[in-house]
Image 1 (cartoon, rainbow over the protein chains, first blue to last red):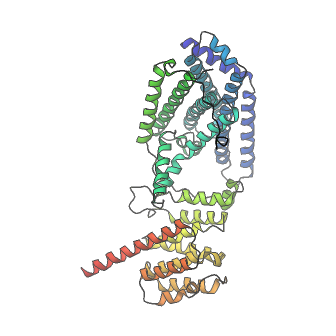
Image 2 (tube, one colour):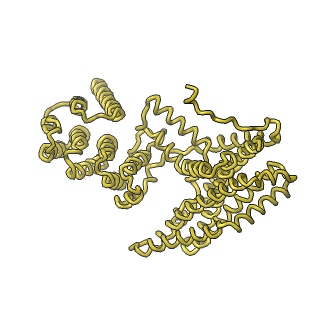
Image 3 (cartoon, each protein chain N blue to C red):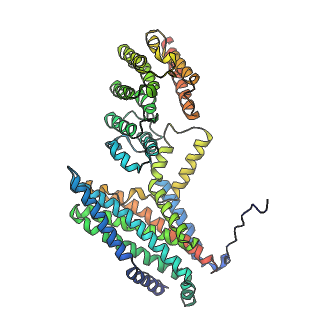
Length: 255
Length: 252
């Protein structure tokens, strides 16, 4: 099974290299650096800090969109071209195919994170940048797992991308929503309490993406390892959860 | 009726026995780990010290992508979460009021027609037990009132009551009351608001004054939001309770 997973993962990487993804990554990189460079030129002070923080924020958003769109389009195209049936006719089990795809897309995410972290070396300390890069790689792996799950379950490009980005935005904002919901001025009626419970329930089944890969780390220093490790562990658990949910759904589906 | 119902085709699924046995176990373990982990690391409301420096109104407008009304209100929701965690007995007391007023000013400038920033300023932040902080908030309310008196008089009317009853600063309260009388020109501003100086000078207690003010606001038809009514009613009950406690303390 391990060999089959490695083979599928390798072909995912080959597909990523031969697709337009490297060019889009390069274009995104140049656009983010160009825009932040322009902003730093018109800034009166903190030009380097502005360029670093703006670049980090833009590159993070760009990386998330690129990996989500790439995973969804790849999986949906393979299903539409009947390539999936062809692969499963070979001696490859469904879990091996799914895990191979997941490993390949996660590696693609790590490569995008590396490409986007490299140019930031000039503006931040290596240790802070390393923490940001690792956290971004974890985040992109989670987004890739979510995109694979939704693409596999929904089978449609637009709905899968919308679901992935919706999950991402919710995961980035859920702790702020939770903090607002539990404030002393929140409505004490049944509706207010129910809203609070719903928010709490959502928070339990979402990853804390607001706690990782923050652009502030490049300016003011990354959090200590004691804070960073639990945040990354939370993302690792969510990655396994998405993988398990995707495996379960894919194993039950009749193609 | 049947025609109206949308038929959702049932997905063609293989039996559960077709799923390798380790996958459901992995799924259950992953769900348990996720819920356990996130439950243990529950996000608390941000602390007072976490309140960052306020951006400029221009930056907020830029971030709103043209939706200034929505952004201003969302920013207020975000702002009111600071120093408001459940275990905090006196929320908002420890906030840095220099930063807080800068945030309120920037949000109000982003959407000058929103009542939210001045409502929070007068009804929540100005009721701080620390006189210096309360005064800073009252100054902010007065500065902003002057820019649009006909819309912002309710905040200054409450500020006048706070100046009299909490800060015991009669000249300041009279100054606010006189400003309402002098600067409001809209005929819909009720007469009691224009004659607030009488409230200030009369020897009535805080509860009585607050009741008259709230009754006046309700009668003016200005309070249409049920949540705002409920909030003000609960504040009134709190004042009532505080005065009862004070009276029973004095008797002892």
